[in-house]
Length: 548
Image 1 (cartoon, rainbow, N blue to C red):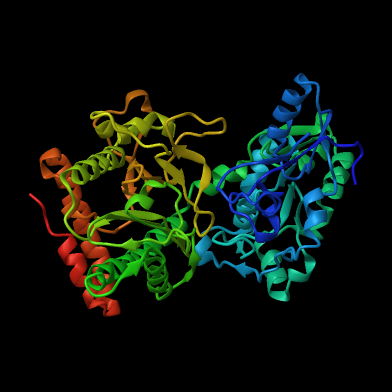
Image 2 (cartoon, one colour; image 1 turned 120 degrees about the vertical axis):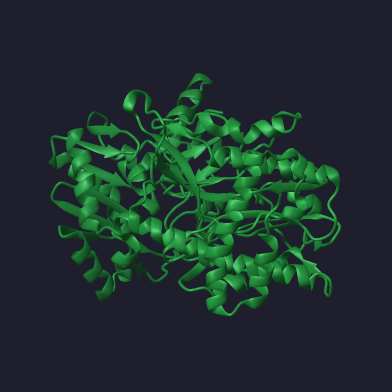
């Protein structure tokens, strides 16, 4: 199985496509170690050769890791047969995912695969590349205008793609290519379409590399195995151009995302109306609340799935930033504690991600001050006006300043990109306190979250999260003729007024909240009336009353 006796074997957390979420079959670290946290790598220890599956490390991390091991007198070795998989085979390992594939009509995508190929080929030509290798699953799905269900919460499927100036190669389990899927691929791509088994990708990369004099474009965030299939002199190691294309939504995608958020808000209004009423009658746990919210979402048109496991967190569990209730941790939601709910859905026309924090009884003055300062930060960021070319980390402190003013802060980023019926976490842009290596400036028509928070260990958690669209804005001046940008909130769920300390809000902040609630009332209220959801409508009207 190995070319050298190994003294240590690295078990990374990811899959061959460096996905954030994993199919059950790829959860090797928890299988071998029992560790089920959200981040970590396991090493089976002992000195000389250190083995690892080259598909499970990005090329960038492989290069860094190899150098550091070499400095310590160790050698990183590629192990082609994954040792965990060899053991796992005897323990009922899950089958290779083979969910049915979904094609997306132009009313959802706004752009054919052929048009996307034209843009990609223009980018390739500009840097003298003969081919682009695409390994990120959401990039493949976006390019092909298809979705799948191979990974929970992420509408993607296992495949690679290679784009040349004349052809489109797709590497996928061929048993999944039904006549409908084949017709879709042919009509959408308008180019020579070559379908090959998923396992053929390295062989085809090597063949293209041998047959061309030009370079092959490959992201350094692709697996080392895929990058290593390209001769060093022919590698063009740069971030995939598809990542940025996908991040900048077209008008059809933006309209769909806005509509998806209205339907999602309707479901959330139903949920909070139910929660306020039901908690006075029956006990409600975190898991029960999450299940009820999912049921409300399922009633909305074009619902597909949740976009991530619901963070339904009562009291002290709200201070655990990436908490997910289990039978062992499941707490009751009460009228004495804060309740934080971070949830989202996948609709055919958009992906949602929204966090609201509510108190179903009488909040303390401390809780109200913390909540109000989080809201002030949220408004600071949402109303920011900034020049084109600004990266998200430049804006991050706007969301933190009201907390910093009194010595408070939070230990997570302030915003992440979000897909159009794709991954709920999407790059290459974001808003955080530090610059990232492959960060890009915020650009018009990107979608990103605005989600400051505050957490007290053993006490409570607060977060207010909206999805916003980056949009151009007219300013009195236009220094340097660069143009300026701001944000448009498209999450339309009321922010609980009971939790506010009005004395801490400025007149402009009060105006922003009243205007935001008016938009919520109009857009979501119209849908609730159409759907006959009168209890939810009454709740929406109550929660969007004007504050002075």
